[in-house]
Image 1 (spheres, rainbow, N blue to C red):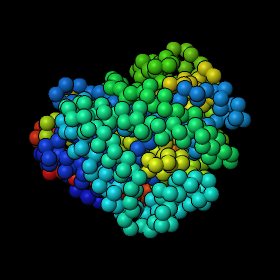
Image 2 (cartoon, one colour; image 1 turned 60 degrees about the vertical axis):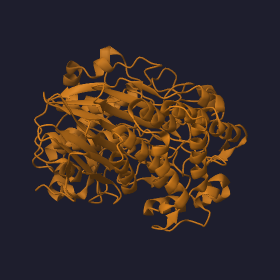
Image 3 (cartoon, rainbow, N blue to C red; image 1 turned 90 degrees about the vertical axis):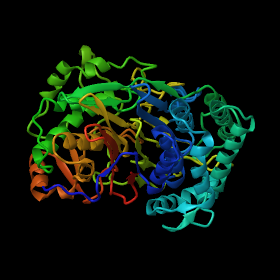
Length: 594
């Protein structure tokens, strides 16, 4: 298949920003133009995404970021993933007659970590003041932003839920009825929330660091925490279980939590590349496990639609994600055997399971000889095999595939990739007076005692959010990622494998036909799966699709441009240039730079 590019790969020397919305990318670039660095730009982009993509992320959600700091010459991970409330226990959930945490409503929120994560990135690695990075988001919330068709569809889908059961959300999102695509929409409550935080941060004067700390207190110990506490103590709201529940989250949970900076994990690939990922409190290590498996195969991506490539990558993904289900969890609470899972000998043993035909079995490994423990049954009904390319929402607010992404590279040599998500407008009632709802990431926990990802107070759920950073020839090279829940470390892996096994540039590799499997249990409620499934963009071609079906894959053809929302920024030290590209699917992601 000849290389195709919907847009040019951007090439420049000053700075590059790529994100899932053109307005956010433009805001990030404006920060670089004002003298900010990559981290300042990422924070401003992230706050703007909370406004312009409210169906994909919000202030009540979470964000992990992975970065290379040229000043420190090291890779670090910022954890903006909040933890389970103190009252959220297996016994408390089971006492409600539930076998899993509902995917909507008030039971599933963790501590809202996005605000703390963005502030920590700004404080430790940025250079600008809080006002510089918050003002664009406040302006869009106050004056309006254009409603994407998907926002209008989402609000329309949950309109009855809001009007009948979540009046706080109706106040924010249905002020004039369901908004029409392309019209300007305003969120004055959110604008007022962020404007008040800014006022309180600047009230005492002082240093940049003092302002950021004051803003953190306003959120986690001040008026934001007070509003959340008051709502969760008294409100009972309908959720996807079909019943009304009161939430576990309290102001004391917010006050006890802070975002952190930590080391990630890394693995070399084919002697030239090194990929860095967050730890097993995310699904990020499955990317590294897939690399370990694929290193033993002779991959040629010059012919992108070749059935051998798709088959090998898909079968390797099934094995890696089976290990995710059995072994991943918050390493602050459980011992995750990452050394064994990433060991070359373990990969060689697992690689022998990749056969000529597609597997319909869920086959976790036994690192160190330990027996695996699986939280969910394989093959549970409910997966719509071809329906995960774009975000989908049920009338009860249950969501799949909803996330944003940001990548930035600057002239100083810094790189950062961030994957903000959660706090979706459709998934949890808006907190009165604040203009946003909470994230529902606790639905990823299971209730199986002894499992690494069992619900426990103060614990991080094993997130799907998974930004990526790569080195090439020992040099910091590329920040990249995609929305897509369980598909994140499939679509981004496909992109990376195609890019490194071909002569394609960033944009051509993003534009290449995509695929994924729903073989393993989905991270989100109701944790369904479709063993043996393979969702492909029809651009793979009839011959390739037919060959994959003949090998036993349960192939479902999605639209030609439906799978993935990848973006990337990169450095090419040999040429002395910066590069960027963004996904054309969905017609809203853009890269910008010069």
